Length: 180
Image (cartoon, rainbow, N blue to C red; front, side, top):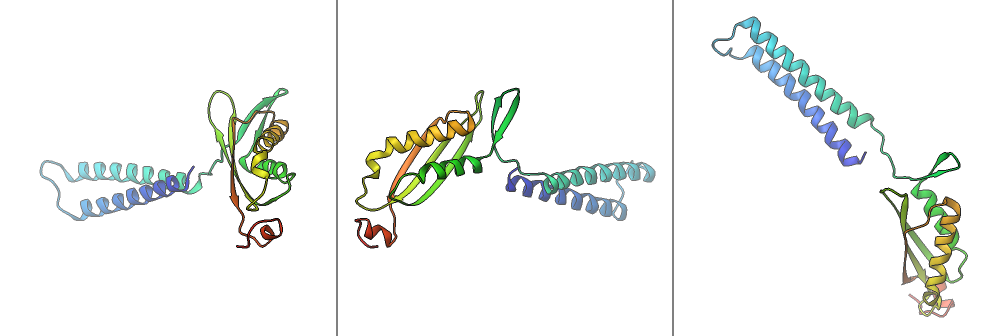
């Protein structure tokens, strides 16, 4: 459950419980509407009070105690289900990218896609020297990452996007780039 949803549940629960206590207090200490006997009013207010507090408490508890579920890649293999988290997919991608020389910085984003078949997308940002020849090898990098991910998970990656940018490091100058 997302943090904002948990916050909304907690807030709604607290507001409902506060409203229930306020109406209980106002109706018992305020004026009684005409045509309703005092015992009937007490039963109506008490029932509404209990129902509102119960709903408020359940919403509050759900917001407070619910766990946030991270999307995981589910793959049915060999009579069982294997779940691979996005963090594991990122780590596999980092290891696959490290095998190429000339990368100074890297960042990976993995998105697990829902649907009939399990699949995911990977976007990689690579910081390289200014005059590096690495962008010309983008297809090698893409296929190597896709192959590594499929080997480890058993599920083919839907898409691998690579973004190259000039790394702002002093080592980029020693590799032929300009100092930043």
